[in-house]
Length: 271
Length: 234
Image (cartoon, rainbow over all chains, first blue to last red; front, side, top):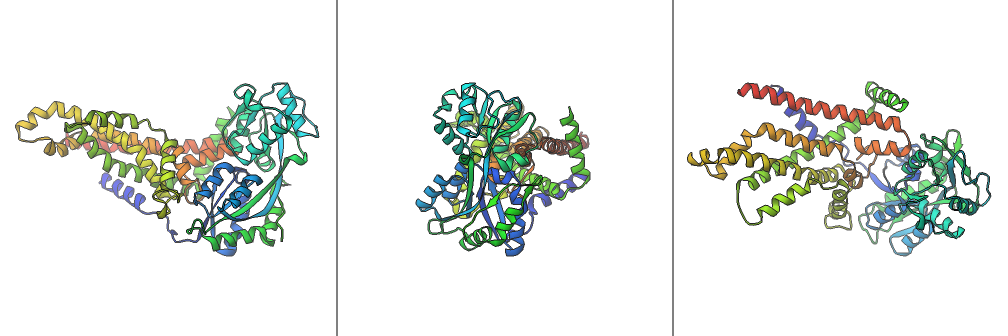
């Protein structure tokens, strides 16, 4: 008796999926930083309410996001590494890149600041001091937009950090939040985007130590995957989303998003 | 220690608050893992029994590979299934990537070797014990197979539970092929990974506690069924 009941319960569970397989949706592949900051949860429902189109978000580092988009496994790409974005469009994978918003990167580190970088105007000087004092630094190490930005700053500072990998330079190979967890546990310096940092709960002894260098500018771009290359791409709905997020309503929603009272992203779409 | 008490608090708040998104996540986890285990059992039980009962060229190789595949890393399975289901891959036209179906496929690949390898061992041991007797009754391997599977059912349930444990605990494969999409492919393990990445360690651990309790519930139910029926037949 019990057995029959359990079997029925099990079979019902297995074969009764949630309804709504026919719902209208697009797949957006984007960076972990925008997702971890909580922005999507806030603004995407507004788009869905207006258009009836749901947005399925897959969050991975910029490198993998571009790879997924190139394979045609998404409809819209939203990332933050301009050179990769331009290459993606030039390669015939994307229709056009649109500005969406920006925020900035910051350097966080242990509150006792062993490399003494607090208040430095130049972030490359800051990294140089971290290297000179061999203070622990955690890198994303995952080919993400943030990782690429970090590598470009090391290059500007004239330091080959990869040579010290495994010593004071640690490559986590992880998303932004996971890397902050690692940095908080060591504790170590790391480069983070401001949105994820504002939202991040497990700070431990980490403090914001360097910011406001123009080098730390972090612009996001949105691109429709080219339906000429991947005919199954939902071009109309994808374009509707891009029009919305770069239009009046989307831009206002981005500007209105606050994390603990602070604006996390600044809209900059060209009209 | 505060993290642990916070985690218990978070788990209790989620459970007693009957959090709607938690229910959705739990149901999807169960649906994906139970479907995967059911399919894996349908494939794994007969495969294991065949390997146990028949002697043929290449059997040694198959048995060893099956045992080795028990240790297959979930991320590798995830990657393989991703490449197969990607629009750029051979099965891309079906558009299965980032759906629960993709997650079930990945978990079937993970679980089938476990069930098949353990079944092979169980049936082989039983065959050693009963071969002479069964042959004298005129039952060769083909007729012995259903009888031996039935005879070993209590041990085989444990093999299936081991498979379920693997499926419900893994995160690497479902993360890659499911994409951890809210309301679509987010399951217990991927939400735990997500909360860790947001630094919400207490909530993550709270979800972990719920996952453990669920798993204990399923194993408890299986144990009770085993014992009730055992007494029945004794």
